[in-house]
Every structure is written in structure tokens, then in C-alpha cells.
Amino acid sequence: MPNLFALNMPVDGRRPAARPDIANTAKASGTIHIERRPLAACVAIEAEWSDLAGRAIEQNPFLEPGFALPAAQHLVSFRDVSVLLAWQGKPGGANRLLGFIPVLRSRRLFGSDTLTGWRDDRFGSAAPLIDREETGRVIEAVFGMRNAWGGNASNGLVLPGINRDGHLARSALEHAAAMGWTATLGQAAPPPLPPAEGGPDLAALRHGLSRHGELALAGAGSRQEMRDAVEMLLALEASGPLARAGTATLQDIRETAFLRAMTRNLARSRQCRASLLTLDGQPIAGAILLGRGKRRWLYASAQDERFASFAPLAQLLAQLRRRSHLHELIGEIAGQHAVAHRLPLAELRLSPRPRGNSGQGVRDVLSRPRRAAAGG
Image (cartoon, rainbow, N blue to C red; front, side, top):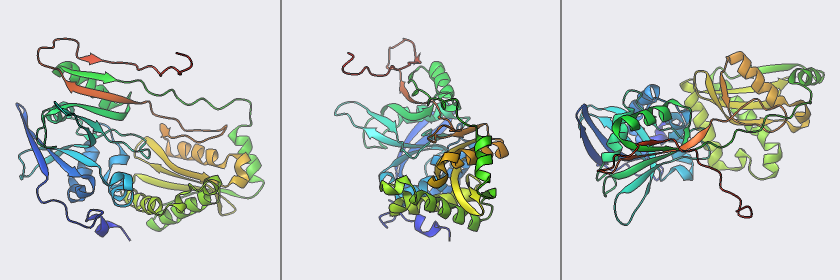
């Protein structure tokens, strides 16, 4: 049964405050006002939020209602998250949502605060949802916001976990040059090492595995099939090394409840796919992919360790990528036959230029790794 009723109340059972914090910012090309709201209370604007997600300059399933609302309900780390909502129009009227930016605040004793975009280890990307046609105006509105935190105007915006090669970073840097902001784009972590050469290829391993029985790829079409596939994947994970280490999903009640609700919700909007590789009808590998279009994120995966030498998970992902015509499958799996990769995530810093400063507005800084203490 869809978990809609529970999501209509914050996690502590109390109703949201009747008067959310709002800051107005008037611009020559229109009015955008900024509202601060707890993440759990954003269930009241789920329709507007979903509409913005489809218009965002960079789509991000991890900030869609189907992911974020179950997380706010079940996961402790999401419960104190606040969101800056950028609305086009006057407070209290019929407005259009232009920005959805989860943030933390870095308080200063004197002067303005710095707003830091919020991210979680479960995120494959922390890119906020911003209307593709309004990136500059939304960021300007955040710079000019007052009273949304009970303090001074924002001193800047720090966005971690941004795709360095993505549309959001590119657009923000272009607007920085045009509007006089300062902008710093950090360097991404180095990509994972490619698999070692010299081992058997997946085709040979698949042939060897087929000697043990009939191989089949099972996808989840109906809601019941989705639930069944998720449960089978959880069972596979619970029979492997993660369970022995005490970190399997089924060993955490909150994580299990979140995963079940999230996969159901995103499956309704065709942003979640659960697939299994079976041997004589029994699952030996499973994967949950999130996202739409030609890019998907590998959110969860497991394989039967009895067949690990045949790389069943790598075989499953290779088949999914081939059959779905995916251009990008974001994620990592251990072993010689990994078929996924990592986005070049970096930190983007934006701030309004101080008055009287006519220096260069955009600095594309490639931050260098810290030297080891022993190396100096």
C-alpha cells in the first residue's frame, strides 16, 4: 500500500508551522521570493516540486519527492534538513516553484551567513533542482534573501556534490561572468582505476555459469513484481559479507523501510528499476537503478557469493546497459569486471562580488590534493 498518509505529517507527528519563513527579492525581470521550509513539510507542495523536477536544469532523482520524502520520514540524517524554495510571484498567491535547494547554514558571529547545499552519502548527485530557464535569477534571489534565517543577507552559496561537467555548473559559471559574482569550481576526485587486464571476459564467464543451469534476466514490470524483486535483492545482500559485517540493509529497520518506500514511489514515475539475474529461477544477482533517460544510478546491488567467480552482478549490469541503451550507468562495483563509473563531482562556490571590487569574477580552480604530512 502506498505510504502516502504517513508522509502527510512530519516525522514527529506535529503539523508544519502555519507561517513558514519567507524572504522577498524583487528583480527587474520579475519577483522571486525565498521560503525556508523543513524537508518533511514539503509534502504539501509535492505537485509543484515534481513539476520543477521535470524542468530542472539538471535532473536529480535523489531530490525528487519519491526519494526525499521517504528519507525524511524514515532516516534520522534527513530529519533536520531545511529547504530553500524559490517561488515566482508574491507570497500567498498562485506561484510557480523555480528552485528547491536543501541547505545547511554556516553561522558567523558578525556579518552574513554562508549557505551550504546539503548532501548525503546515499546521493549520487547533490545538484539542487533549479528551473533551467531561471538559474541566474534563483541564485541572485538566494544572495539577496533576508530574514529567512532571522539574520543578514546570504554571503554566498556553497554547493557540494555537483557534476563538474554538468549543465548546472556550466550555467552557474556563465551567469557568474555575466552578473559579476565570484565563482570557484573545485576539482573532482580522480576516476576509479580501470579493471585489471588479462582475466576471462564476461562472455566466457557467462558460458561457464550457464553450465550450472538456465540463466535469465528478470525485470520488474508490475508493482508486485517490483516489491518482489526488491525483497529478493535484500535477501541476497543479507546472505553475503555485508550481513556478516552487520551492515546489510535488512539489519537496519529504518534503512529497510526507506528503501521499500522509495523504490515504490520512484517506480510510479518510472525512475526506479529493479532487475535480477536468475539461475534456474533462483536470483544470483540483483540491482536497483534510479533515474530516467540515458543516465541511471546504481543505488543498490547484491550477488550470490557462491557464484562470485563468475561475476554475476557485472553480467547483470552489462545486460541492463545493453538492453536499455544506457549512455551512462553511474556507480561502482568491486572486482575485475566492473561496468559502472563515477561522475566528476566537485564543490561549486558562488558569492556576490563585494561592492567596489572590479576583479575577475570567475575562477575555475582545480584544487590540489593535500600532501601527506610526512611528505611536507
